[in-house]
Structure formats: structure tokens, C-alpha cells
Length: 444
Ligand SMILES: *[C@@H]1O[C@H](CO)[C@@H](O)[C@H](O)[C@H]1NC(C)=O
Ligand SMILES: *[C@@H]1O[C@H](CO)[C@@H](O)[C@H](O)[C@H]1NC(C)=O
Ligand SMILES: *[C@@H]1O[C@H](CO)[C@@H](O)[C@H](O)[C@H]1NC(C)=O
Ligand SMILES: *[C@@H]1O[C@H](CO)[C@@H](O)[C@H](O)[C@H]1NC(C)=O
Ligand SMILES: *[C@@H]1O[C@H](CO)[C@@H](O)[C@H](O)[C@H]1NC(C)=O
Ligand SMILES: *[C@@H]1O[C@H](CO)[C@@H](O)[C@H](O)[C@H]1NC(C)=O
Image (cartoon, rainbow, N blue to C red; front, side, top):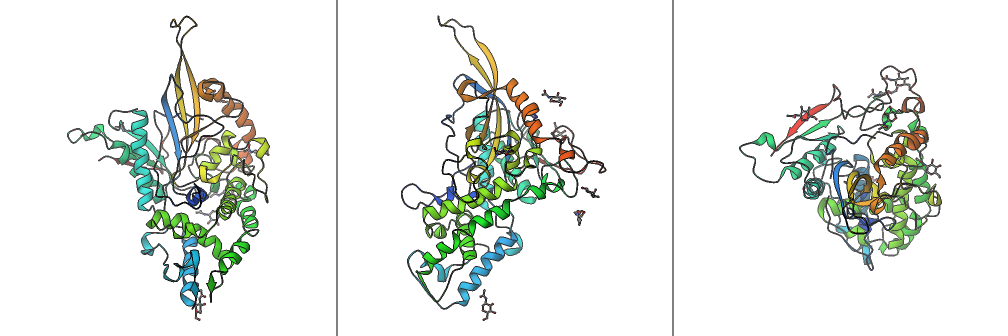
């Protein structure tokens, strides 16, 4: 696992929230449709950098900021809208707003899949946050962001850099306050391990992906019950299970697109927890630790595969995730891992241990590693002996390069690509820019 030059890529923000009951926020239980929020501390490890340590290098692996829905999801919203518009009905209680509701997409050619302004804000804020937190560079010092090729990811990178670069006045020396985005083309067939979008490069991957199957099965266990409850508030319109899925997605998306949280208030907390678990199953068995091929993307960058590669959030007492019964104490939570602009960060810390019993300085400097997900440090299994449950750098290297390497296997072999022309198991884009990458300078 490389620790690239001072910084890699990053992203941060809090968002308007709604609450149901005491302290329950559906926007923190909406899985991949959750706008960014800080994850709570994990295993009791404090969020702050341990006393006596400073972060001297960091690499951030970040999901794009909040965006408009995928075209397929939007089609579902439109179908719900037509169904409502077609019906002559009355609605009460939490559904009183339904007759006047319109979907939060008003400029179809320019919105689905693209970043929303909340996503831009989240991205910019992460740039600001990292500059405040680390102060690694004077000016931008050509901070490099490696981006996947999709427009929403490139835009996330651009807003991030603009936030990072927004300190001081460099009008007379603009070259001192710049960043570079290296956008790698989307993985098509067999771009192999040297990619930021690896799953399409691994033919075997799809065979291990049980994400949709497991989440669809789980949804089937609760959606009818919710529809039955809600139909009591309607005369002349009948909700069916698929409408429930659409309506729950509309909580996170409407909140981030237009600040409308009315769908968040329709469902009870237990219904949100079931919805969240369906997301958890989708990621755990799709691109996370429950897909036997996920860890193979050892040096690759999407978030749940990085978690798998590092062997995190998969403690044996909670794994594999039950297909039918959510364990409320489980570690793996999609809302903490793949919320919009969610991130996994590797921080290298330089720590002074001081002093001896007499208080005399026999200071010793050690190097340690923290892995954070959405701000919360996650202890590395079997390696938490450093200050504040950090992992000694030497042990981290051997954990990644030996233990996890063994669990992951070789990319080309595991993916069934032996003998295919042009494939490689090595992700070298951090040190050698591929010919088909698009490089862009960002300044203010
Ligand atoms: C709306 O009504 C029209 C005309 O009756 C029908 O063709 C269409 O399928 C209906 N749409 C929905 C979503 O129910
Ligand atoms: C900035 O970084 C990019 C990518 O790392 C590199 O190609 C470029 O030469 C650098 N520019 C300067 C002025 O250092
Ligand atoms: C990828 O390969 C599949 C089958 O091998 C083919 O159908 C598809 O068009 C290819 N996609 C691209 C973008 O080359
Ligand atoms: C991709 O790999 C498969 C084998 O998994 C091979 O059959 C196919 O020809 C390769 N496609 C390209 C575009 O190289
Ligand atoms: C996650 O844990 C399960 C059960 O202990 C194990 O089978 C699986 O290999 C683990 N996943 C990874 C990526 O290590
Ligand atoms: C990791 O292991 C490979 C051989 O598998 C070796 O070439 C490389 O130097 C090792 N990296 C570190 C940082 O120890």
C-alpha cells in the first residue's frame, strides 16, 4: 500500500438534518443515499490525533459528493409521481403532502448522476478542512488528486482543490497556489489493476457479487409491512412494496438536492434501520468483505474494496452479515462507509514518547498509522499497540504486504485474466501517469 507524496485526495461537511423521535436521524441511516456526516468513534478509540503525535503524511480515498440520482432511480421517482398524479385520492397524517409532491429533478438533461450543490459544498469543505487540519503545504504546492473519469468525481476533485487552495492571496504568484487533477479513464474491459474503477476490469468479480440479490431478498421481508401501515393514511391510492423503496430513497436525495425532508418523516426508526440494513447487505456482499474477490483490489480505490483489502469492519463475531437478522452491534455500516463524500483515510503519525520516570527527556520518535473512516479511527485487527490504538508503521506494512496480500491473492490470477494481453496486477498510476489520463491544473 503506497503512501503517496504528502497528500493524495480528500473530502467534509454537515448537513441540515431531520429527526424522528429522540435523536434518531434517518439521514444517518440511509446508506449510500446519506449526505456526509462524521461517523461516531469506533471501539472507543478517540477521534483526536493521540497526544504527542502529529500527522506527517495522509492519503484520502473519497467517494464523490452528493449527487442527483442515477437515471434508473429517477425513472422510479417519475413512475411514483405519475401514479400519484393519476390517482384521485386523499392523504392524511405523514402523507398529507403527497398530492402536491413533485420529484426533485427539474432539469433532466443536466442533473441525473451529476453533483448537486450540496455535493459541491461537501467537496469544497473537505478541502478547507484538510488544509486546517494538516497544513502540509504552503500554497497548493501542486497537490495531486487522482480522480476516476466520471464528471461527478472530477467535479468533486475540482471543488476539493478550490477549498484547499482558498487561503491567502497568490494573485502575483498563481503558480504557488495550484493543484493537479489526474483523471484516469473509466475502466472498460481489462484495464486491469492500474485503475481507480477496478470492478469492471475483473471478469470474476461479478460472479462474487451477491449485493443486489441479498439486499432485494431482505427488502422483500419488510416493504409490504410498511406499505400496509401507510395505506391506512390513504383513500384512493395504494402503495406497493416498490413504492416504499423509492420513497425511502427520496429522503436522502430530496434532503441534499433541495432541503426537502418530508419523506424522512414518513417512516419510523425501525423502518429506517431495515432500509439501512438492505444497503449494508448490498455493499457487504457486493463490493465489500462478503465478496470473495473484493480484497483482491488491494491497491485499488473504491471505498468498500479498500475496506476489504485492509481487512477492516469484518470482525469474525459479526461476519458474515446475516441475510435475515441485522445484528445491531455489527461493525459494517454502509452509512459510515459509502455516504456521499464518505472517505477512508490513511494517516502516518510521527509520535514522541517522552519521558523517563524522572521526567528527563529520553524522547524517542516512532511512526504509527491510523486508518479513519469518515473521521473515526478504525483499529486495525491485531495491530493497535501504538499510542491511541495506532498501528506501528512497520507492523502495518507487513500486515498489508503479507497478511492481507495472502488473503487477497494476485489480481490477474484471481480475476481469471492469466494470458490476457496488456493486463497487470500492479497499480502504478500513482507514480507513472498512464498515457490515457487527462491532466488538469486547478488554481483560483
Ligand atoms: C396513468 O393513467 C394512464 C391513463 O389511464 C395510464 O395509461 C398510465 O399507465 C397510468 N400511469 C400510472 C403510473 O399508473
Ligand atoms: C504537478 O504534478 C503533476 C502530477 O503529479 C506533474 O505531472 C506536474 O509535472 C507537476 N507540476 C509541477 C509544476 O511541479
Ligand atoms: C467489453 O467486453 C464485452 C464482451 O467481451 C463487450 O460486449 C463490450 O462491448 C465491451 N465493452 C467495451 C467498452 O469495450
Ligand atoms: C478481456 O479479458 C477476457 C478474458 O477474461 C478476454 O476474453 C477478452 O478478449 C479481453 N478483452 C479485451 C478488450 O482485451
Ligand atoms: C470477512 O469475514 C468472513 C467471515 O469471517 C470471511 O469469510 C471473509 O473472507 C472476510 N472477508 C475479507 C475480505 O477478509
Ligand atoms: C512488499 O512485498 C514485495 C514482494 O511481494 C516487495 O517487493 C516489496 O518491497 C514489499 N514492500 C514493502 C514496503 O515491504
